[in-house]
Length: 311
Image 1: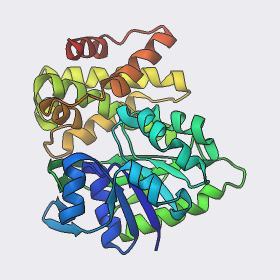
Image 2 (image 1 turned 135 degrees about the horizontal axis):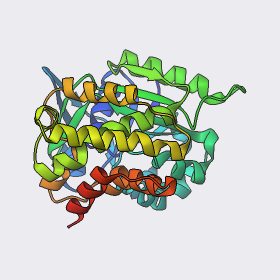
Image 3 (image 1 turned 180 degrees about the vertical axis):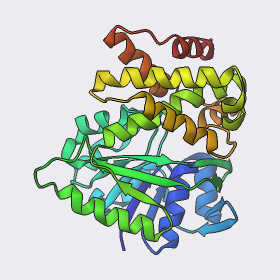
Image 4 (image 1 turned 60 degrees about the horizontal axis):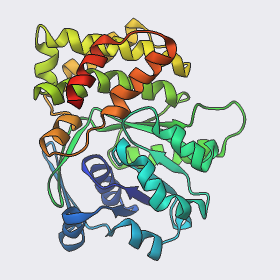
């Protein structure tokens, strides 16, 4: 049994937390507002495909977490918050996490979260990760709707070192635990490369879905919008060179094929826009534009959609 802290029990974190708790692991969830109240009063209810998962794991806000728990109580702390909240959560929990050497696993969108965490805690405590083929949203306080294969890819940040790395044993333990909980999991030797491959998809469909109100299948099958999606993916791949990541046309074709074959889902950015929440625009498109500028290359599709969303 593992002791797992899920920081941010929203659509993604709540789904994985419920799966792990159902498998017998000791899971603590963090949340806030009406969602937290519902978790404390009724527990977490997750609908995934044809399954219904009831999770009664303890749920707390960050202040209560710091007051009632110690970082050493956990085998891993999983951050499943929006990328826009990474720096703010470090203000709230950074000192608490520094009291011990608990590993921190990021399951967030974008390519800038792990560097921020590594600057705070050091590379040797950071695990990079990404949720793959999953759509997950909080449809009402305490209730999550998820769909897709809901896979996880994780790895030692920024890549697997040839030297002995204590994180490798933990990664094997986590992979086995996640797999046994019904979460198909892969350990990557180069997690930075995997994060950029996911950003290819995220920048391809998230911003334009928020702009148009269309789901992923509608975008990838539309005669004009599909070209914009593919163009934004190509711009993402080109900008990855600023981080020393080599993504080729074959990678873009694979990612475009993957999202085209996926269920028709609302992207997280579209859901955030509909609910009036801050968009992860800077974490996704902004990351591409900053690196394109550093490389001295143009990213006209991304720049145009970014500008329209910031109006």
